[in-house]
Amino acid sequence: MKTYVKSFLFITILSVLLIGCSSDDSSNESGSNDGGDEGSGEVTLSLYSTVTNESDQAAMESVIKKFEEEHSDINIDYNFPAGEYESQLRVKMAANDMPDLFDTHGWAKNRYGEYTMDLSDMDWVENLDPSLETIFTDEEGKVYAYPINQAKDGLTYNKNILDEYGVEPPETFDEFMTALETIKEESDGEVTPFWFAGSEFGAFGQYFDQFATPLLITHPDHDYSEELLDGSFDWEPYTFLPEKLLEMQEKELLNVDALTAQVHEQTQLFAQGKIAFVMATVPINAVQELNPDTELGVMPVPAIHEGGEQSWIGGERHTMAVWKDSEHPEEAKAFIEFISQPDIVKELAEGTALPAGLTNASADIYYQPYYDEYSDVMVEPYFDRVFLPSGMWEPMGTAGQELLSGSLDPEGVSEKMKDEYTRLLEQEASE
Image 1 (cartoon, rainbow, N blue to C red):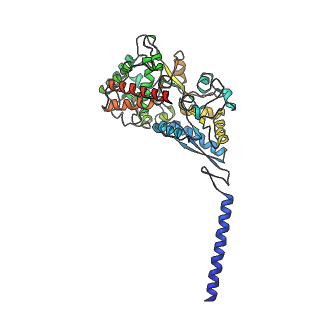
Image 2: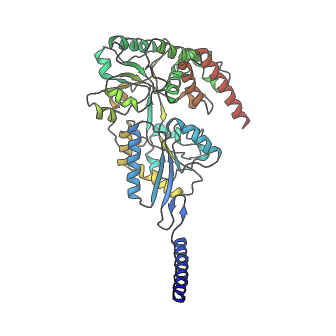
Image 3: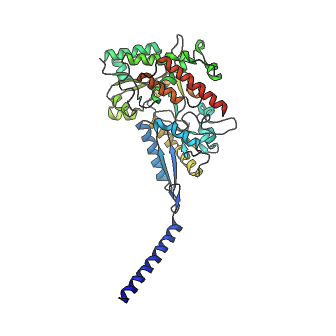
């Protein structure tokens, strides 16, 4: 019995000593550092991007994986919140707790400027496309973000369908409506003339935002830019856009599930020849993987007023900024330096089917012949980025959802826009 007790005490004491040594060793050799292992030198960077379609996301994921393979001590926790991006970033801005790397999606200076690190000391800056200089830099020389690509937005169309039914890419809004009606009739309703992934309010935001430029800005007899900038615009002329969108729905020119359709459905429907037009630039790679015979084209936004001209809507598209208070600024800048290499610039431009933001690489862009065809068409900035207070994107898009669901009539859409416009202007003035 005494032998048993002695053995038990010996084992107990030994176990305590071993546990104590194990705990000491653990505390000395490893620890938490923002998701990284301090002992192994790992750092985890948070990254938020607005990329939504599968091809764009695949391109970003591929580049992130390559970076992590080359920089084994840096991990990237990436997020693609799609329609929730702006609301999530607003919460993070309010808490002053931004991602290490984030997409400024058109607001590099006006919305996110105070949160971005100055990148002017980086080598890639000398290759910044001159057309983007005023967007990404200020008079003091600060560079707010890195341009992954640049936008020339208008309409994407299924060239096979337009050719089959003898429809020319429309130059005016009236011609656009005629084209939609022709496609509906000639296809016996088998092809959706104008398709929306309206489960995300941004789909309708694109329609209102891009068509607002020829409606309210570019025609000299219908230029409301001063009124929009000084806050005196009364919004009655805007009613044309919701009226036409509702007319499209009533004439069955939109997809019947316009309020519930999701972005990922677009690729397959284009490959199946079920869509004629969308208000977005569609990555061709994913479509042709499903159907190599599919040909897509892009065109500027049609003119609205008689004597008006078409417009590309463009500027900043996907970007990467560094949060000025990031705990890992050098690692975050290392990622941007990595994606500024010519081969990665080319990969991202081709993967997103958009022109690169740097001049150090030549990308084989599927839509380049169309950009060349319309090279004389002016590129206008996004309407909301210049003429609307911050925060208008969401009400602009949700108003479209409410219109097609019957919650608002066209006049109600304009009234909602007026109320939100006034509220946000007053909010900006009080800050």
